[in-house]
Image 1 (cartoon, one colour):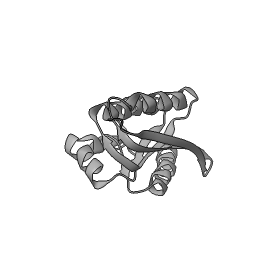
Image 2 (cartoon, one colour):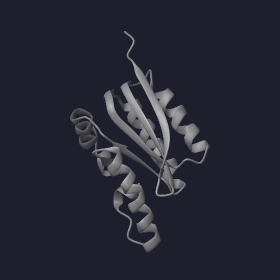
Image 3 (cartoon, one colour):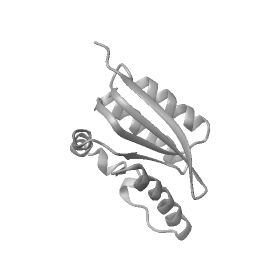
Image 4 (cartoon, one colour):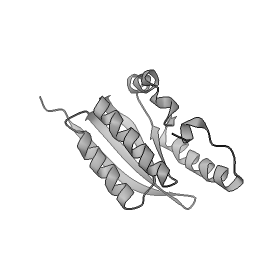
Length: 137
């Protein structure tokens, strides 16, 4: 049985910051994770280090999908960026919470909150505010 996975990506300016928004939908599993990995890697290769992954229409995520996100998290943070997740279903959010990933990667109710968080991050850097544990993974 073929399980659908799709994504779209747009760049938005948020008070001068370039933020990539990647909307994913369907099933992110061992047969589809490479599509997302390749796309996120291409954004990183283009020096796009501020990325929001929007989960609004994602039905399922496997360990392979989780692995992609955690791997990309390291790369963007190594380049002074971040990967933020937004608009998760309760089922997917519970999985992130149960596995402890929500302590390592920030999850927001919607894209607007995630975009605002990038601005807040810039403010912290400008004013040398302390880095939270989930920001230092």
